Image (cartoon, rainbow, N blue to C red):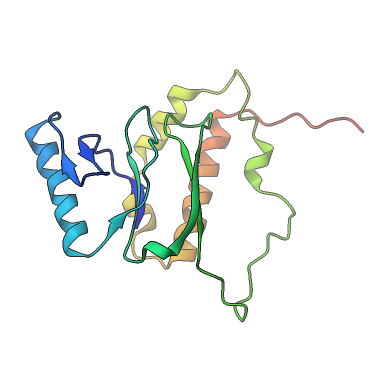
Length: 166
């Protein structure tokens, strides 16, 4: 289980809470620690992912499941990107889905443009009922629905790259 949990008051190295945050937030953080403990899950990320805080977490019940991980700065978020190399191997009998177009549709967008409408982009993302958008779908359909919606919104507020003349 992984995600952005936003509990800066949890000291993951000790499995304890520090002072800070609202009482409600403290209670939620405590509940997360208790659920992880009762479920025999351990949190694996020990490197800060936002300033001095470990907010982006990876829980597992098998500590050998992670070979390595690293955090990387990125321009799209104030949180570091976490790249995890797991011990899990893909079943070779499963056929991998291939992108037959050769590239992602997101590559047409110029994420480095000064003309990106960041506020409108954020507003559009916040107006989507994400749970309803992917509710009761199988994982592959959820992923494709999510990517389609993200691309639709990005195309509204991010300029298209100019093609180089050949």
